[in-house]
Length: 102
Image (cartoon, rainbow, N blue to C red; front, side, top):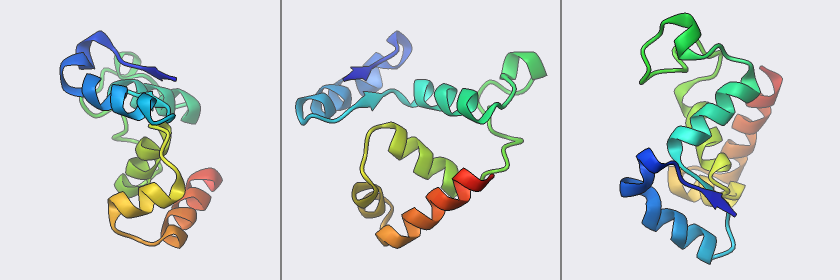
């Protein structure tokens, strides 16, 4: 139900266990970013010689849309994402629509 990279275990293991314990999926932030990057067809930072810490510098998505994708990739429902970001579910649905059309 989840996956934690060894490099992220120290900071995210307890959160991962808690998510899985409640029947939710969980992927570490690093892995989620890599999956999103792969899904969007973005070049890897190694191929482009880009800063390893910012693989989405050339992304057509806004920082908020990337944040929404991150939370959804962690297995959160639209309602949970809206709560976490202190916005309405309709706002999250709008972000999802924009993400899918880019």
